[in-house]
Image (tube, rainbow, N blue to C red; front, top):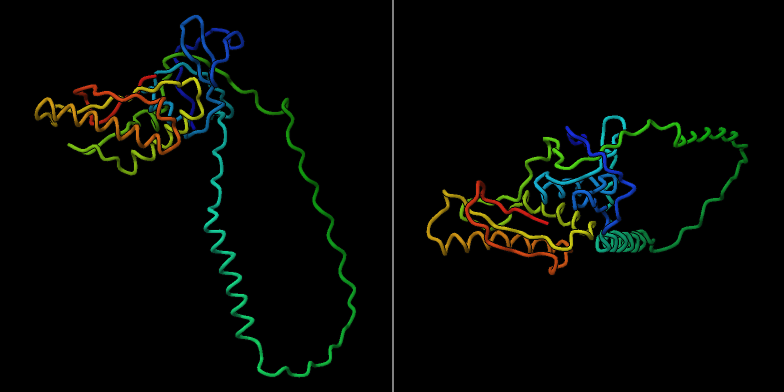
Length: 249
């Protein structure tokens, strides 16, 4: 992932900031500062969606790219494993049953000729991993109001006109947001506000119901992704520039 644009780096001492729920708290501006190197790329995408790209963060850059945690590997489904093992056993049993002869034939005599094997090739030496001093020195920057890279700057949870149904793109983004919230204990309270646009305006009660339904749909999808329900609070925000929801922490 490309680094974030930081036009005015912050010069507060990171080591003097108090640790607080997976982030650090800056006493100077009374805000949480997130070390992006403790997140995966999906979680960074979720952080940008949660904050609109307006957050205090610390980024580490090596070889022109952000230093991030690797994405966790997905565990293999136990049902699929049972199917594979069960299928192999069934196929083996079928093969034994099908191949069993009606009458055993006398085995042919076996002639064994001893051949000296070729010597095994010597193993190639394992390359030594670089030491910390041999790695390129990372560039560490810290700032508030970070500007997100263009590839993730416009990620929002959006809806079709007059609808509170989440499509697959919205659900994929919500999965990233949920991963970010679950990895960030300092996000103890996440507010979700639903919006409707001028083009969708019909009458006040219907507009409010649509906006609230959108916020509730996002909350319910986050709960399905493992976010504790008590951390999520929904509200009807009113008319907005897009058919979407906004978050506040």
